[in-house]
Image (cartoon, rainbow, N blue to C red; front, side):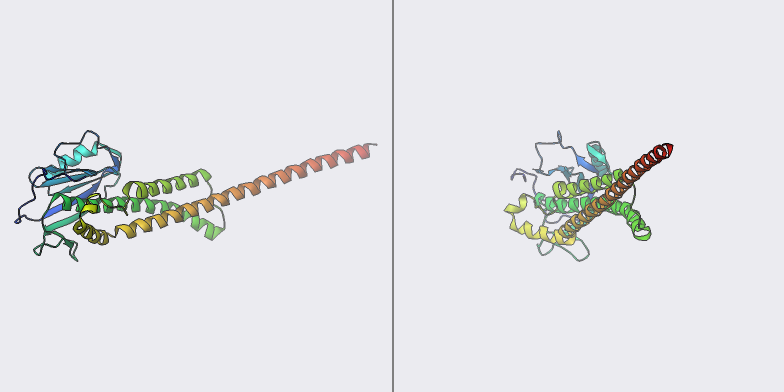
Length: 276
């Protein structure tokens, strides 16, 4: 939950622009032991770094750095990378520029610039949440693209040659990969869920809705789930085709064995008959 009024004071009205950067470090970040007494929130864990810096750590593998110097960013990423499980082969990133809103209205400009009345902890946390979900969704989208790339050759082979793809084990692994991505998107990232702070701040709820629209969080989340459902259904159909083909082969072998046994019986009968 957000910190009480004892949190560091807001920046003065003359503050300059900030750069926000979300980085996908891995499948999960262990935050145990990172808790601090001056933390701005615990879910996600967020705290100040230096005079201008703000860091939010999301357990589903993303860290958001706002207003840090390059040295502070490198140091923060180095420490948190050691706590990331299943480090991402490719680091997905999402960046945004945060600028003062001269009219005091929190919004997102057409060019993607995020404008806020003041860089308060609550506002920065809302921005961090949207950026983190966008980076995590980009990571999941990349994984789903990989699954589709694996399915395409099998579908082409079936369409062009009428042959069922071989390898039931590979097909089951494909289904497992799709289920893992689906679990990550729906359970861990929870792109459709809102921060606790938004329940008490209707003004920030409107601001978050604008960020949500800017990064198309709900639309991307729903599209991912549809694509994952399609992959699971396609892989299941391929598996059924493989099982059917195996059953037909097994039936053919059984019929051949029965015919062979009949042939041997007829030969034996004929030999016995002619022998008399």
